[in-house]
Length: 288
Image (cartoon, rainbow, N blue to C red; front, side):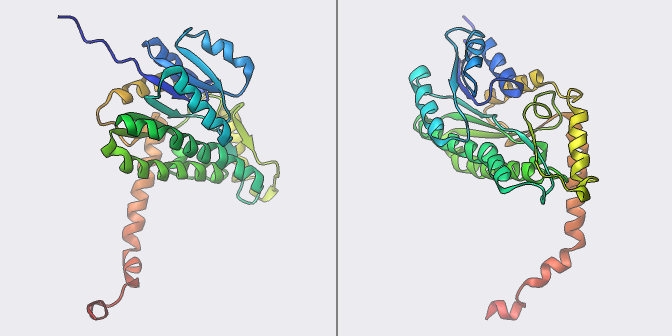
């Protein structure tokens, strides 16, 4: 009796020029799947499609442009007949103190990291609902669980991704669609390099906080402990799981920080429990 053949999946991955997106595309193609990857520069198309001619398909798309999102999803349908796995990977880091960042810089951060992710998810969901199956992997960040000085707006965009994805997972579970948030720590990608933006305004009073974060990222670039290729293998495992986790932290470096954060949150909850509970009506008033 022959062994059952693995299912060939159709992936739609945003931001496949480098980092997690590129490594995941390479890994999925290596196992025989079909990958539709989005890029922002025409010069990158040939190199991507050469990874697996006939199974690697490049589309030009800026995730912050709603019109391009609709066109790309329609093109994916023409190319592959549908999308089995959506990976919202495209995004970029941003460092700047709350007072330093301009509204234009903040809006662009959210247009790319959050609103683009939402619009693409909305565009893909109808076909997943119709088939009663699908996987959505949303790239969040360790910063989506805890904010640091200088990373407030980046963290805010990822906090929004966390909330959206958590609600989405609850809404689509009964429809056969599974959602997983991936929360990387420090990985050797372009996050701290070419994909890293900084507030144009600099205020000296924030040199010890946001300025320190900015310098830290510059020094950390190229020395991060995380291997994107290994993270890609984890993502392949996730889409094979009948019941994948809602959240998965990627990288050992974030584990002690997150444990300390949750422990401190519980201590703070207990410390202020009496004050929290002092805001309710008295029992007689509730009965009335």
